[in-house]
Figure 1 (cartoon, one colour):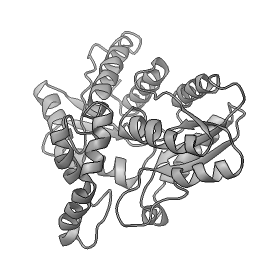
Figure 2: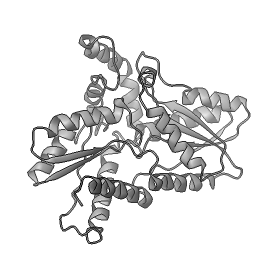
Figure 3: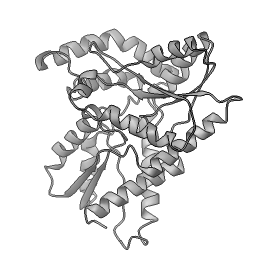
Amino acid sequence: MGGPDSLDAVKPFLQNLFSDRDIIRLGPSFLQKPIASLIINKRLKSVMEAYSLIGGKSPLADITAAQAKALEESLNSSLITHHSSLPFKVYVGMRYWHPFIESAVDHAIKDGAERILGLSLYPHYSIATTGSSVKKFEEIIKKYHVDHSCVTSWFNHPLYISALVEKIQHGLRAFDKKPVVLFSAHSLPKKFIDKGDPYVNEINGTIQAITKKLDIEWRLSYQSKTGPVKWLEPTTEHMLHELAEEGVKDLLVVPISFVSDHIETLYEIDMLYKDMAQDLGINLKRVRSLNTSPKFIEALKDIVITNAKNEGWL
């Protein structure tokens, strides 16, 4: 999605986000922007305060740029193995703030790209996230005569699962006793799922793959809902209260649908939920985000190479 690169960017970032009817529909289309403005004006102060607490901006662009650099280096180190003399170049395109998908595609074309593979960094497909980004990518790239393809889901890729398992194992070692594991996924409007969106099924698919490798007691909840429509349940806030009532004292939170640190991990989980858990008598710790972990970069490399081969590009 991207994230504001300064406090001044928070409002226009939110305006871009809430104007997208693929992610949330606010009444009829002609009322989308007016309703969005009302929501933004109501939430702006608290959102800016949250960003202030994590350094005055989202770290997402910097982390994604580092992921792109690591992926590019890893891909190009494999060129000889795959009998290709054409180098890979990895660009970063965000949906709602700089660097936008438009500038990434334009940059690639100006650099002479002959084939472009769009790699969604959402592991789990939803029309509200991957769908919106791919729609924008396709809209932009049709202006150019260039071979292109998109990777839209990789929720159960073996190396991605291994990268998550590694992080969870590290997190488990931070407790004296075996904690309950709470997978906290980004929420979605429930009506998307009711209409057949595969997001929840893919989240559960990731968890099933993880629990085949780890013997853990776990729960699933959803965070970061916003706007007046009905969202997925249970919320992470509700789950914390439920776990406290069950007598749970140690809790390891796994931000399951996120591959990078941003406001949902650094503020929502590390500050908001941690404080809430402490008040409920729960010792909450969070699994480190994948960010540029070597196993995660290996997963991305394998996904790229596999899809490039399927397209006949390698």
